[in-house]
Image (tube, rainbow, N blue to C red; front, side, top):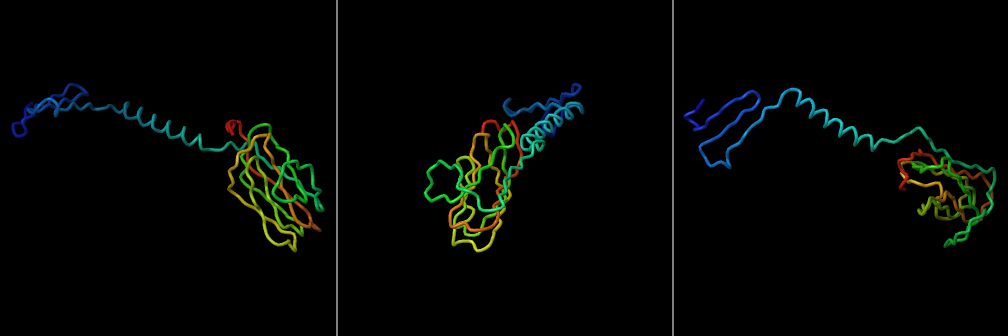
Length: 184
């Protein structure tokens, strides 16, 4: 059929609608109408791609990590062999729970009386927990939302400096292990 007011010829053949105009060919267009099945297939493909992105961001929580050590008194200097820019009075070292990479999301540290410096060494990261005058009471620090990925060979050490006199020492790391983080 023709439309004299617009100068176009519109033809319909099944699901294909072709529209041409009297202007040059580069401005003409062909519009293809989709069937309901094609719309559904495209939407399912978009949903599948979106769910794949969500799945990559989700954490596998089937391997919980809860590594801790508690000492009723002041811990010994331990077998810390690295050179530190301060004198290590005591150290507490944790062993990995799993033989796969672990994502450490939180820590809990209880420092004894007399601590002037507390540093947590996680892999090649050093996090200062406390630095200041000597603690006069047993002090607890906790933090959530770290997101540090450690392999089974990485350090998990709490280093303490000062004249440690009394109180328990507690060092705990919490998170999840997953083989997906194998390139940590």
